[in-house]
Length: 354
Ligand code: PMP
Image 1 (spheres, rainbow, N blue to C red):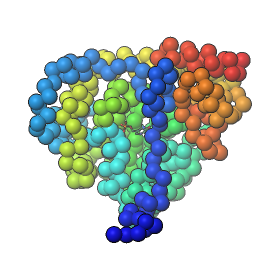
Image 2 (cartoon, helix red, strand yellow; image 1 turned 180 degrees about the vertical axis):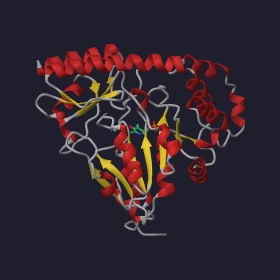
Image 3 (cartoon, rainbow, N blue to C red; image 1 turned 90 degrees about the vertical axis):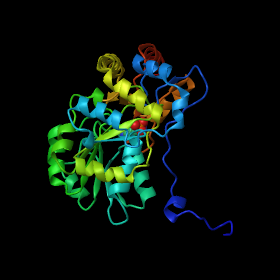
Image 4 (cartoon, helix red, strand yellow; image 1 turned 90 degrees about the horizontal axis):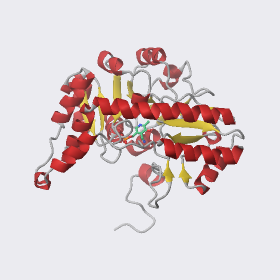
């Protein structure tokens, strides 16, 4: 047995602080706009699956590769089952990618700021992480491929988080051609954006696109994500995933929700309308807003003090996300909630800056 001051953990794990997810407070009467959840329920088809599901089925293991779900996702994306891997949320897909492509000699690269899970995954894997600063307006630096050279995996959220902007597709096309490692384009928010990079994943051997059902499909609690790529890449990633990484109930819920395209369009359109209204109203008060292609706004209040706005909203029982730091600290990230919730945000905001 080791003495108290000697850790059994690998030094990298002992030294790291770990990724901090947005808080999930237990108290009611809060307006919760901190983790980009969908204010509307999932498709009614999900209720139907839950009504019909018999607990006795849980005696058996689920489909290990989620083939039924992969067939549904593949058909609706115009690709084949072999081009899809399903994950326990897209965080699982990201973990699988970092485990597949990174180690001490094979660094990860990602922009800064971006989804803060990426560097944490590199740390767990014992891989160096090269963080490449975005331009002042959070656009991609022109020499990103050169700065990332030598990394084996580039993680790129498009639309980016927490900034919400959509890097122009031509720049992504050029980047994927110029970079000689794997590029994973994290399209967690793509259903709120004008275009996507699925064609790149199918046509370029070094591109993977990942998606989630947590945001646009309102299934954050069910944990479903997937990636699309050429079949050789998917086959390799399959070796890395947990044997049964998606539980049986989630596989069925996800297949039902995925097929309800009309419901997806309807709820996404409602969120887009609310986003446009709130962005316009915040702009009128003097907020600087990064043009959003997501279900959230990255908004800087008139005095540029994101931390103060975050605290004042909190005192009014509205929880948003604040990322301290020289560049991000001027902003808060506000998830788009229901119209009633956003009316309350606007009322409080007018009181603060009116
Ligand atoms: N990618 C990005 C950019 C995100 O913001 C999130 C949500 N935190 C995820 C991936 C993960 O989503 P999930 O694991 O719920 O699919």
